[in-house]
Length: 457
Image 1 (cartoon, one colour):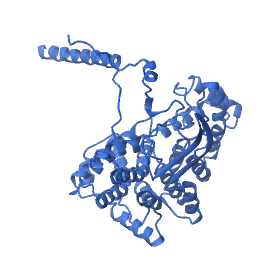
Image 2 (cartoon, rainbow, N blue to C red; image 1 turned 120 degrees about the vertical axis):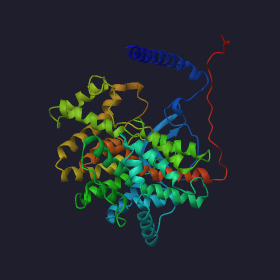
Image 3 (tube, one colour; image 1 turned 135 degrees about the vertical axis):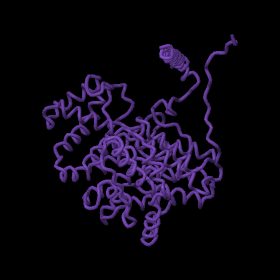
Image 4 (tube, rainbow, N blue to C red; image 1 turned 90 degrees about the vertical axis):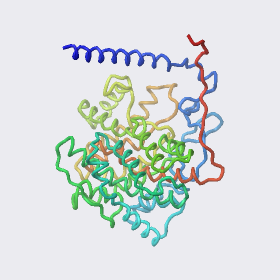
């Protein structure tokens, strides 16, 4: 009886302590908003016009959504550039020759050059040899250590690969390239096996792990491991490859790429740097937007009776903005972007093939609802915000990516890992650049301390 009472008192004391410390943390973390202006501090590394603060230079990717005329932003059609090449041209070439081009994009991002036909074949074959996980790795890192989030399993698996690399801390360029390609090849396998392990452990599904096929590209291999031979269509593989291409790189300023550049600037190993980028991407404000779009669309589908009625859809979008519908956040998810204004080129490219997929899966009516919201939301947003609207908004790639993945039959638990599976190419390219340019320095910004001085008492 006494032991139980002591245990209850200990628990109560702990809860009181945590509650007190939590309140203190909140109090100690507040700032008068005027202080930011006083010291010219740019919150979130954003300028007053919401553009990003220029903190570095890169030869890898460029994201264009506006031009600046003095302090004025001039909206322009969005462009995404990989090593000087418009991603739209890469996609057009892939479609024209009916080929999967993600591996070509990886080669381009890493090396800065497009491979010739023979070079690309050799590159694809080399990636194929890297896909098999080390002996006992799957059991030790994925199956035995159960996890409820694939991104966490992916991060710990990457760190686990450090222990198996005899040259893990070698930052010579050849070794960095080898480590990068090894991770790019292994990400899809780790993600597919992690998903299977989660379903087995927590949903009591049959555990089946399929071996990768060295002759297939990344997109088709991933579908093979998840769905099985002859269980996916050519269009599914095509649109997944397109999605990988579109998510592979997005300039140095996105949070996860900036994270890997910061950690890489210290000279740390590849595995630690990549794990830090995974941790960044896992955050719902970065990698989880398509989850929020899907949730919002489910809410709209349930509450709007006529999906083909612009009036009914518009009225519901106003309710969402007024925090009276969906999750009461006041946000139309998938609409708006930090850089793009008139259009997100990734959304435009994905939308074209998404319609074909919707027809194949008998979900055209749902696709048309997405398309209507894409057309209506920017004007509704501008009208609602009025003079407070910082800039024009458009549908971003997340608006359609969740719909596409659901049509393919992929579950939401895989959406952010799929992002990582693609973006690892850009991450590695930026890490290589960070560690190899001559004038590099450790990235060390400054924070101004504004806590008042006081005596110890």
